[in-house]
Length: 376
Image (cartoon, rainbow, N blue to C red):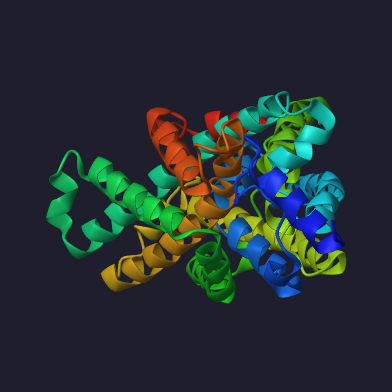
């Protein structure tokens, strides 16, 4: 038997295995086209989103001043970047997704335990992001047609519409996700900057916006809020630090994924968190209360077309992070349960259904439950 025949026989043996499907198989070198910009854009698109804003602004609403909240966000993201890069190495080296990588540590069947635990967390976040997107659509419709606000089920209808949009992207596959990240990252950063400048103009400058003092009277009182908040920031991307091979398996080289992630994650999370911190501080001046939900802030812009433009930007951001952070991993994880029966697309559809059943509207009842959710 020649070497070519032996390789063909070996490949045929692997492909006949019940553990194999084309979505879980190692990515061939010619398909590894993600470069430094793609990974930086991935993190920009995933970080510039409403939950990032809400996490930081929730700290302001909970009693931190702007510097305390910003330091908490920066420290948490530096901490989570370390395991992120360590786990990313295997994906770039071998072209394998997280559940296949986990087989080396947990065994063929045991790998399903961490994979499904990761998948269930992603399903919950998929539901949360989809509900937030539905709220943005609802606010956009109300801005153009105020009578829509009287429709009791308006938010629920918009939630279903955004859920269907996510399903459409799932069916289009991984390349659609890369395309979305690449074109939207610069646009989303500009929208965030515009929101910051709007709040600065309305509040009379950064001085008044950032002058709100901390509500904590002692170091012990501060740490009682700081520790769960820091845990929440780490938890924000902790699950992605596990399944990062799902993305780095497409890397052209180790350097591309390492540099792209190191540039994209801490800087963007800190920058966009600052926007959330500053704007939430400004709402205390403008409206007399800390409004931690950006959808509600943008709904008060006054100009309906400004509201529509802002909501479109939020929808793009939410769609980006939802399909990247909350679909790719569970789709592979569910596929690993039964590779012959469950493809990437089928796993993505399972994610969408489970996220719906988790009733995300109950998880967004207030900033306290939101931050504690991050820490769990």
